[in-house]
Image 1 (cartoon, rainbow, N blue to C red):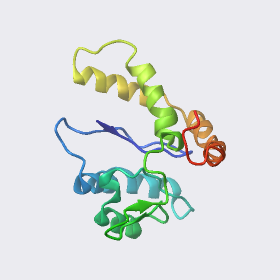
Image 2: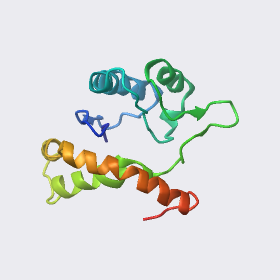
Image 3: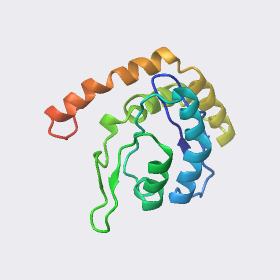
Image 4: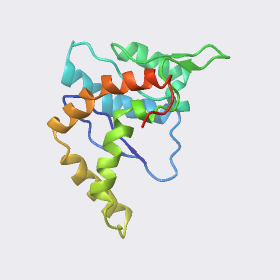
Length: 161
């Protein structure tokens, strides 16, 4: 499993999750703490920004929501009342997640064009492909986001690709 974050200005390093590790709230908060917060704070300083994540169970955990409230200037929240667990974001929205609608397919096309004999070989290919994603590419991907939001509204929250 691979984790990453992007913005119009840059990207985190790829974070490889060891085989067999379950991404629970603790693992996820460690990923945010060690790979996202310093990166985002350095990139944006005091500028306005919003952290987007999907509603994977580890993302919705109360502890994670409190952590983000404390550490992120803005993020897409989840109602963590006991019976609701509903966020401001569609729960499965690959059409609205830049990593899902663009980045992972770029990495797959570049890094997985041929089979890899080992996991290490695949990791090296993914890192190489990741490093080839330019700021200009990120800008285009992120700048496409408002159009995707409009398409989602037109599709009444349904799939639109």
